[in-house]
Image (cartoon, rainbow, N blue to C red; front, side):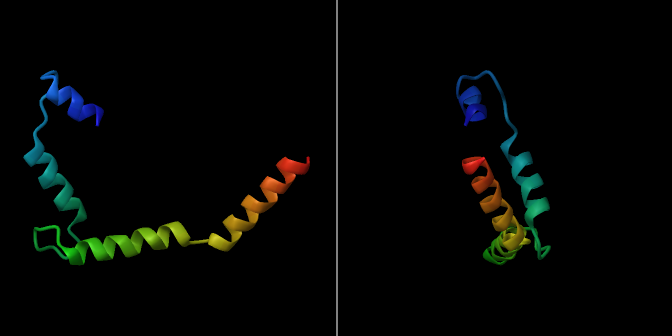
Length: 72
């Protein structure tokens, strides 16, 4: 949002088509040159897997840390 505020104040110039081209090239999973629902679905699944990997050990650590912090 701060970048957009600087653009609005005419302090900064942003090449939005170049940013869009870069983002699509990095996020386009199926290689069709467009960011589609299929790409978003695949990336969402990958992100959820990343967030939930080793969840039981992370939850156990968090609970033990909180109990140790709370009760000394």
